[in-house]
Image (cartoon, rainbow over all chains, first blue to last red; front, side, top):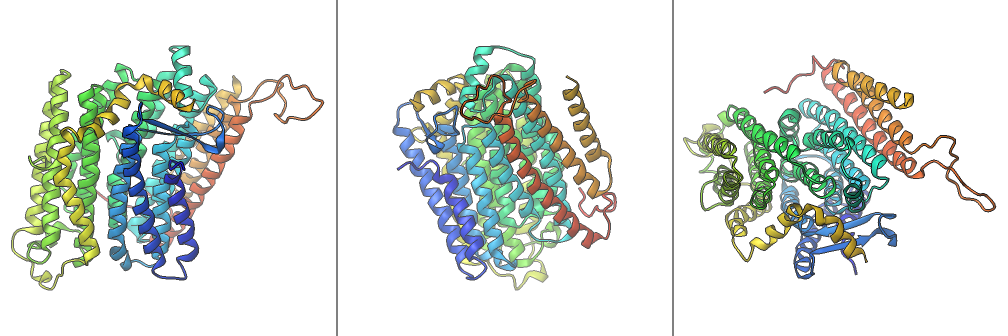
Length: 498
Length: 112
């Protein structure tokens, strides 16, 4: 039996069942949501393992039995498998965290329904091999995230959600316009077919225009700096598990993954686009971290750091060298782990003492030891302190910059890292160390389900550094090779179809 | 060619409406206009002068027909647009309940 379509079917079916049965039975949303996420995590790891043994590392599923380019195809290559593992690992941990955390909101089943729809959209974007299908899944993920940002229904949340929805739908329109231009030029929507037609037809002036449209559209979804305005409002306003999901996974899949897949594998990367990407990446790195350092709202500070860290990922991928792409993807994985952990920590603090303001906290280490410990791990990872995963990926990106003769960008990356360290020193100092604020004498550690997911993510932060070393690095090297050998994508897909 | 230019004008009107208007409802209408402009462009891409509808029937020889694929895609895209508009209007109503206004310059609790 073919397991590729299950990555979309399972979350969609779970969303349907939860919305159907959830309002009558209280425990069903928890059970269904978590078991669906667990099944997805298991399947994605199984898939990554199976893919490793196949020659060519590619699997194609023909939806409805139609042969591509007539029908829609779903393509799983090493990059897709890597993204699926990242997404579903984070999603499962967040689902476990939500069991306890979401009890403070009403209508938990609505939360799980939207959450499952979002996962269906994200998984769909990663596995689809068809450009319009990618747009549809992107919209499914986006619309459910607009609704989830407004989940608390307070005035700030509504405002943030409106802003996010307006900017997101403008971005989607640009993406659809780009797809329309590409369709008019190539007469096909299948990504592999489009790549071969484009290679055959040669250069046209449509291509730079389409590139700019995609850069705007996906750049806005990824919150690169000129397009970042919605992120610091939208990410802190959502409930903590959703902030973790948005910052950890959504901006990477809808932004970075879709951008690199389309530019490297379909349009074919050229040096002008690469230099734009590097520049935007470096700009995001600096602007994000400078804005972050003055924040007193913990979640807002983390949201600005998401912009900054996405800059690192884009910088790595934009270098275009094998080492740079390896570093970028490695940092993408690491960032989704530690950023979702940091947001879950902020959720745990909010759950326990009911505030996000750093100035009101203080000395929480004594009352919430596990949260403090996992937060310390995540902070050191994001700041790039040696034994943790963030150090290795940042080091690889900086080395790749130097190797590609971009010493200036390497310097900016180092500066960004130092400022990140400074701002997380501030978080540690005000939230966890120092004298215990008298108000929080009675504060308690959060329930065990929330602790479990934070501990697991913390452990992943510690061991994920191993991905830089063989034999584990094959997982990342294969994923990076899909982008490095971007032109081979079409040939590989056609080879797998026959 | 004129049709494409008018399509571009429509797109620009929509963008202007999103960027410059202060009323939430007008912004939502602007998004609707942008979506319609993109959908119209997609339909125009598939149009052939003098082409007939792409319906296959017996004892008919079709020589010139419009491209059916963009029509199918635009149908999907319209449904997505409906979902976005419905969500935006719902949020706008809740914002009106909280703030008592549709003016975006007065809806500014989020700063920094």
